[in-house]
Length: 346
Image 1 (tube, rainbow, N blue to C red):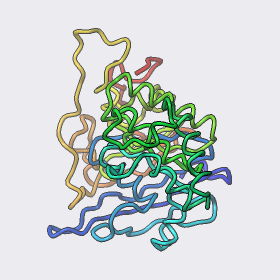
Image 2: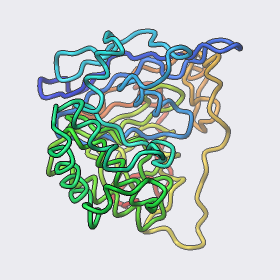
Image 3: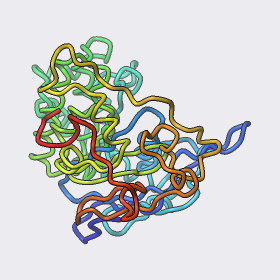
Image 4: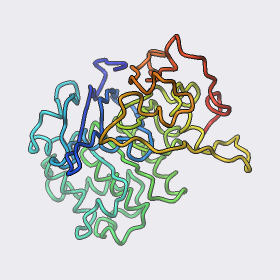
């Protein structure tokens, strides 16, 4: 794993998470390792079903067990706690106080029967021992921080009385209430229109700067990544296949899957009649993952060796690795597709 220092808030090592089903074991996360520095914004990207949300929810132990279970690995939080070893009761003390989560759809995550003020004050009274009055004052402060007007009145409203953008801001307020060290945002802008998306991104950037919280953002939107993150983890079929700084992933990508992701999104220099290039095929079945590189069946550069053996990560720089046989010294030289890499912004 790259950059393992004492400055890390989170260190995930060889994490493997599976689901038991009637049809057999689904290997959702297969040996994931990464670190997160204090105050850093890290993006985890990839197609639907690549394991990014399972990884994020495992960090907070939110996935029901059974059917899920952690097969192996460790999640070291704040240099001292291994999340995988904690009981549910111990996790309840960390969730909401030291770790917060912003979910994709606030309408299904907020309690429709509770006023939003009560949903914020609940965590403050439980984790910080505040009185009802002090918690209410803090809730009003937090609603102001997340850009909600007239918070004194809003705290008496129910979720259905707010717009989608307002509900997402309330979700962020609940996650921030106890000043957590780690904030995990799982597709926080997917259900919002473009204008509100931009506002939520700006809000999260400003929160990161003001509170010095570390943020993990789970997304398939590379525009959000370019706007918010400092480092990027690219996942495919339950594994990390490339990771690096935002500049390294956008301008010097090394894995054909990352090239495919970058080619499938519009750029500012794309002409209006130029078609986007989708990645052909579908991800592999994680009931029976392939023994070689999981991307080989969809990769235009795949060699026989790719089908037989899974590549190790090649270190490209101090901050950049890629798991691809094209990095091997004996592999044929392959040029990145036109329009991928270089100094173009997504």
